[in-house]
Image 1 (cartoon, rainbow over the protein chains, first blue to last red):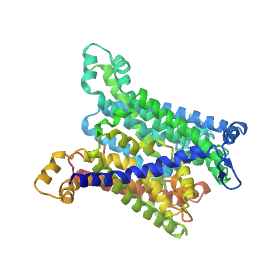
Image 2: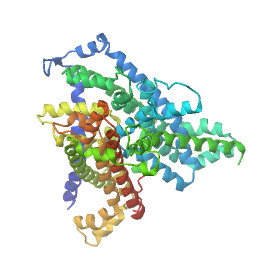
Image 3: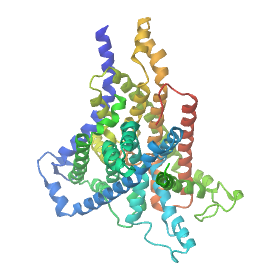
Image 4: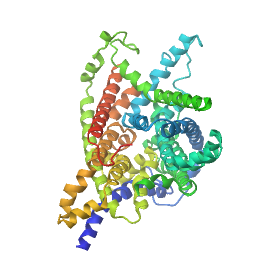
Amino acid sequence: MKSRERILFFIQLLPPALFVIVLGVFPLILIIIWSFWEPTTYWIRPNLTIGAYEKFFILERYVTFLKTLRVSVTVTFFALMIGYPIAYFVRRVVSERYRNVLLFVFVIPFFLSYIVRVFSLRLILGRYGVINNLLMWIGLISEPLERLLFSEVAVHIGLLSSYLPFMVFPIVLSIDRVGDSVIEASQDLGATFIHTLIRVIIPLTKPGIFAGCIFVFVSSLGSTVEWDLLGGVGEFATPQMLESLMTALKFPSAFAISTLILALTMGALVLGFKFARIGELFETLE
Amino acid sequence: MGRGTLLRKACLWALTMLALMFVFLPSTYLLVISFEPSELEKVPTSFSDFSLRWYIRLFHQERLPAAIRQSVMVGLLTAAITSFLSLLSGMAYRGLRKKSYFLGLLIFPIFVPGIIVALSLSVFFRLIHVRSSMYTVVLGHVLYALPYAAIVTLVSFSGLKEGFIEAARDLGASGFRAFKDIIFPLTKGGVFGAALFGFLLSLNEFIRAYFLSGYQETLSIYMFGQMKGGADPSIYALAGFILLISIFFVFLALIYYSFVRHSSGSLA
């Protein structure tokens, strides 16, 4: 009987675990290894070389890479500056009933088409879009602003609107874990709001801050649609570069850039788990 | 309450509302514009002006029906596999000693950029000689939806007390009977949620489908092509149509979860 239960346990455990290992982890290891192989005309062959990484610098692919990094960092910064107060508001200020409503409202975008949401920003930022019309109606400008759409500004706005909800959730979770009593204790001891915020709440919610930042950063780094639909002509980011390298059958180069992105992502995750204890966020499930 | 507190509250309210507008206004605006009969990108001037002209125009788009069929098939398969794997994860999770390793593995794919997942899967399939098809897209989509679906399912399983199952077994219920009468009824909210995540995330997913699909495109790929190509205003109808499908399902879920309250299976 006991051994039958063991077997049953493995029958339940193995399918989901193997699925993620085989399709979610193994292919990543594969492209890391293959980034050090030699390109042939149509594919690659096993011969250790760092040619793909050399080309990354010689052909100045790193310029595009750095630009994508810069945009991702900026977007993450703004998402944190806007997302943290919202999370604080949702968890600490509104009543429990409104809190659930607000949380639900912040989940909805997740279920709506991502490309439609990005595309719809064209109607807002375009030459005859909502913002230009509004500004002209107020009288702030007499001619429509040309560089609002199809520019890096538009890409920033697109990324921010796509990923802002993902900043809010982990922070709400981590404020939840701080507990009201700690914050009340700080206030009872005479600390001002700002003091409590800086000395108590923010340090204790580091896991949520880190998780949210990693999430927004990683997602921005790998986004194509915002650049494609909102960026200007010739506006080119790492994901597009990957796409065109793949179509041009330059596999090791595409794998090398993927490896760099993966290294950044995994580095951020390791730091997050080690120093900000992101794992704590999931403890409620354990 | 001091004046400082009140001011702070007002600012936070304003910021949150502005952020919600920022997130929701563009797509709402697009939805309204899709009902404007003329070729102009504007809000219909009066209620009687709302027209389905561009929606009807969609019937004439040749490649659209096949793309819709493909997306629905991929979505249903993704929903079925995702909810099944989530259910298994929930069952196995109870018996695990090192829970955090399994949880970490399940949610790991969230932290890998979509394009890297898509690219690595496409070369992996090439390695094992699997041709791109509907099924490769399904596998990519399950990998994308599983972390979220598994979290929803695990939350619903956390309301399941070990004592319930032991009691059932002590009273002579077989393992299957305990599952059918105790475990599943108490956790089906989570499993339903997992299926919903699978379907909607799959329906709206673009980059993985783009890299993994074969000859037949999905709805998202078709729509993306139209958006880049600068099509006529029927693109707003197409986008509006997709928004409306998703909104319909979100409402369905809302009704389901507010009427069928499970022990602790809240979505948030």
